[in-house]
Image 1 (cartoon, rainbow, N blue to C red):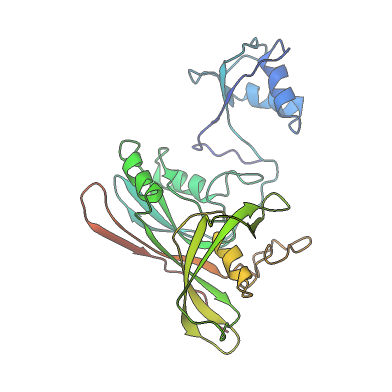
Image 2: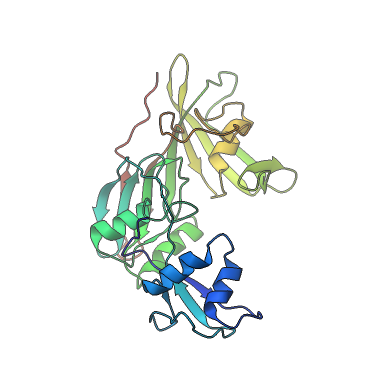
Amino acid sequence: MRVPSTIAASRLQLPPGPWTSVLDGLCARFPAISRERWLDRIARGRVLDAAGLPIAVDAPYRVGLQIRYFREVVDEPRIAATETVLYVDAHLVVADKPHGLPVAPTGRFVSETLLTRLIDRLGNADLVPLHRIDRDTAGLVLFSANPRSRAAYHALFRERGIDKVYQALARPLPALAFPLTRRSRLLRGEPFFRMMEGEGEPNSETRIDVIERGQQLWRYALAPLTGRKHQLRVHMAALAAAIVNDRCYPVLCAAPPDDGERPLQLLAKSLAFVDPLDGRQRRFESLLTLDLP
């Protein structure tokens, strides 16, 4: 088990319950984690109170008490692919993420995430991703490096002040006229992590154009005007041009491989915006490429 030294602790406010100790409450709240593992974490100072002090093994349970704990994953998979840091200043960090690397800790990944790697690499525990891209997607991710300016950059995404362009490889669509705009209502599908188009007022919009026409595949430019989960993947699949190596759309592959040999051919290629702090025009472009066969 690897324990990242700089990743932020998760927070839990203890809910009402019959438990007499914090340990009992944690065991009930997280049944997948054994009592022995919680005892080990407490002994190593990996469970803290609101003041950031390690709790005692017999700390009494009190409703509303804030507990901080560090997520740990046994046998976390190693990800060989490496990120590239494209830009760093006092307020922003821009990184080029490889396929297969999660942006932030989730599920079975804690150490092997872009956020954890950058915190360790740059020595800045204040780093926070301003947006997310799927683990399967490669390309640009923008991070806030300073809590004091974070709200100004978050507002760019909330108010659609960021021009984002992705590239994708998919089958040709010679019967359609490009550029085109795909608008639809995206709803949660089955299983829970998939999305689907449904009836109702559109809540997602993507501009789609063709950059390069190969014999077997085309390179598409995808500009999302909204930021719904899996939006680009669903919109391309709905046009009968699912992105190459998409294991979720249009159908979910059974027991999908996770070896990195057939990465999703989707790349967050560029980000452009007017910097809210100094009014400068900013533009960043991924160094990664998707190669047409």
